[in-house]
Image 1: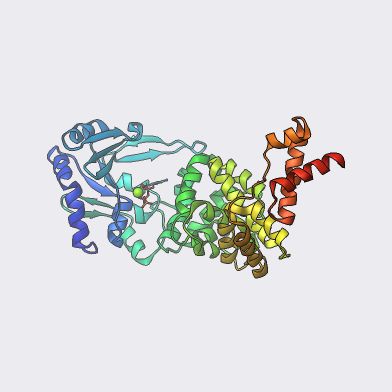
Image 2: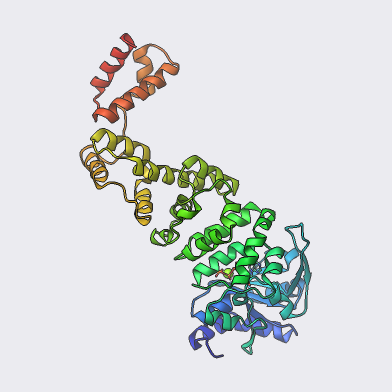
Length: 412
Ligand code: ATP
Ligand code: MG
């Protein structure tokens, strides 16, 4: 077929050609579908292969038993069966035509015998193409191929219907716009603006999962701008502000690390760790991720606020930001708001002189308790004072620390 390299074609035939023969000889259709077809036209390699067929899940399973090493139920209710043979993974879905209800997040799935019905319910025309095997006949009722060539993001049905049926598609729009350098027609953006509030019916888990994929594309900035332009950003992060200071392209400049990308994405609208952690917890992002993102934001903030370059200030910054210092600097550089060079060199100097490990005290809680003759809140207070001293004046010997505690006891 035109537009697909012979080597890519051979690769697909090699992976699933024999399986296609099994389906066809049993009287069923066999179509490679969705992102795989899009990526074939782009010459990009797809890992797993998505297949759609008019065979029911039960018929599919009985064919797969003759072919696969293992099969699993990927949600038979939705008509999807997964299978692996060697290192080939496939997901086979019975053609579907979904019916949605205006107030519900769950479609009621109906199986269909027509490939076109199945393609019509897919998110974008570039993802709504299928190739029938073994003939390699292209099925492209919504002209996804032209859209792909022209780099336009369109929905198979009207965008209002598409986004109302599954509002998550609005977030997917941000991902595909960025990942494939597409442009978005006015109708699509208008529909996003109007439908933004429908996102409320989408589960937080689906939203955050989609976000992770979006933030990890090479250059997410186009999608970031789209979310802002269409009001989706305010819908997703109601506590955010400063939308006019947006510097979307900053996010393209930082490494593809999920936490750093989140921090960079949110920095233009939320510059406070607590707000960021709250917003991410609201999206059911894992606690570990949310707290790391919050810590990067706090570190970035501390760095922008740091004006003095004495050693005590440098130690405080290090103590506060140690594990998040590098990503925070990367974030600020990407925003063109680098920390003051004098602050950074003071930090480097402290690291050089005092090592790069966390600041440790020469006495632990038990030792302090023994010195003051008892447990209790006073121990913690003394430890805090010792750390304060450590940050102000530099390394502290055990002897000095002991003397300080004894002195503080006498003159509280
Ligand atoms: P990727 O290369 O990132 O995996 P993809 O296009 O394969 O992108 P998937 O999320 O793996 O995306 O979905 C596979 C296919 O299923 C899509 O190409 C699209 O046809 C369809 N699809 C996925 N999610 C939706 C959705 N929310 N609404 C409609 N169709 C969808
Ligand atoms: Mg995929």
